[in-house]
Image (cartoon, rainbow, N blue to C red; front, side):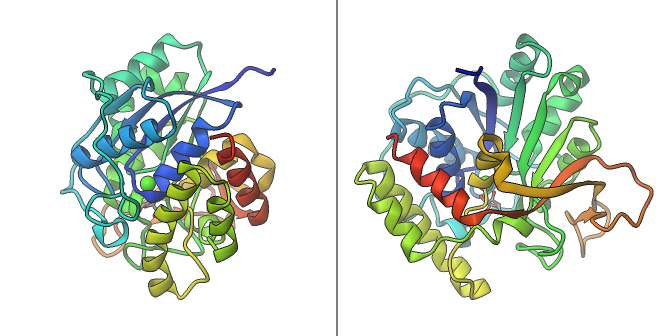
Length: 313
Ligand code: BDR
Ligand code: CA
């Protein structure tokens, strides 16, 4: 078997984060080195707890889970309980996790792991605000040079924004952190709303999760079913976008996705357009490409992949 891709998942669970984590832990192609929690959808004390619940649901109480930054670099925390519910994982009945949180700070874990692993052998997969990653890069600039790639969910060009008319949630919450990451020189792949708004749940796709006849299948259907209500009302879409699992699906099956290498800058100055990803999709500036920006996906293929992998539980 080919060597497994080492990854660190930086996350703010979140129903779609939960599905992303379950998907990653079901993929033989990936070696998840740890989960690092960040404040985002809900405060840190809940995101780190939710990460532990999901690790237990995956049958992986051995997986190290770390708590990271409690608030963005320069801003007050903005959360999204209106989407994810009070707990961040509203929908199914869940439990108090019994596995322990690691004593180390998430940022220290990221720095130590990237420094200890062979150069360019670890992908960081952020599916929440970029506070932990930017803090690691700022604290130890050598770390950025050793990262293989950052594959993140965040931003938008054609879809513009979901939390404000101009910005996507993960980038909006901590635009200064996003700016540090996008200017770090690390190879970046971005799964923006442009693609995740196509990866919609449908009654048939939710039924396929239920038909797995496992706790994971049932809970994934309940989580995504809960979170759907918000997007159905907001966009009048046919279902809810499974944003964060797209980042994991891209890692395992990049051929399901297409995009362009372009320049992406982050708006940090204007309050009106705070956190906008200024994506030069049409190549109208001479700014150097710094990211692979995904625009499209084989949506049936992505759902097939998720369902097939979740069947391993
Ligand atoms: C992103 O924001 C969060 O609400 C989701 O978990 C996802 O990471 C989508 O904008
Ligand atoms: Ca998330």
